[in-house]
Length: 277
Image 1 (tube, rainbow, N blue to C red):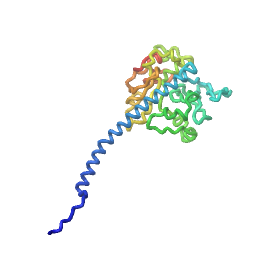
Image 2: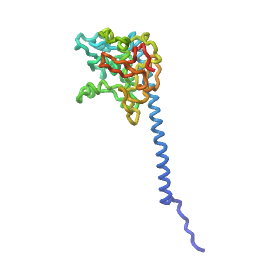
Image 3: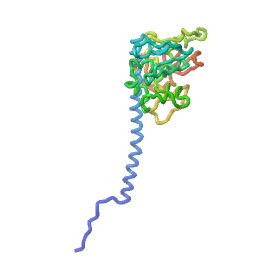
Image 4: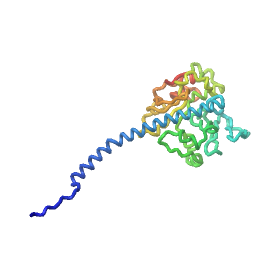
């Protein structure tokens, strides 16, 4: 009787190549879907961040009577209950406490409020606890350090002030008349000042802050009118947040105190009396 040899249970080279090809196709199908799901999750997180910051701004308003604001030329609150040191700042300088705690940074523009607000709210929202919500999802959430502020040409201007991703609308640091007809005839120091919650005429439609970085996107969109042309997490004065495209907001009116800046969300016609969407 002839001897029969048993064939081993093994893949042939052709079968192995087919299996690899199938796995490659499946990976090619699933990876984009996973990437899209990750982006959507980070968008949701950005909305939550914006809503959280808006909540902090309202807590600040409950305490101070107005939204975050630091007067130009005034030294920041030391944060320990003591009075600010009796030292004069140069004219036109905006100074706030930063991180680390013993650091004070200063800017020569009143409109730097848009990125210096963490130094104003840190007494009620401490940096270590809140910083992860102050940066766009996908960005490093490590706290700024002294080296970031002191080292590297221009880093004091770029590194320190860019520590956060969410920008505070200029509408909340000046009177509404700045963005109304005839504003150029009424310009004075008194036109700059804080905004109280009761001043906002349409809180559900006036943007308070927005994600200016969109760190979760795989590719940077084009820039239109000073904004990324893509939906961004925006928190409104009533505390709600949603994804809206800043380039599709109400066109901005020129700010004569800021070089004629017309960026939407910042330069809403009528300021806090107006609407962005």
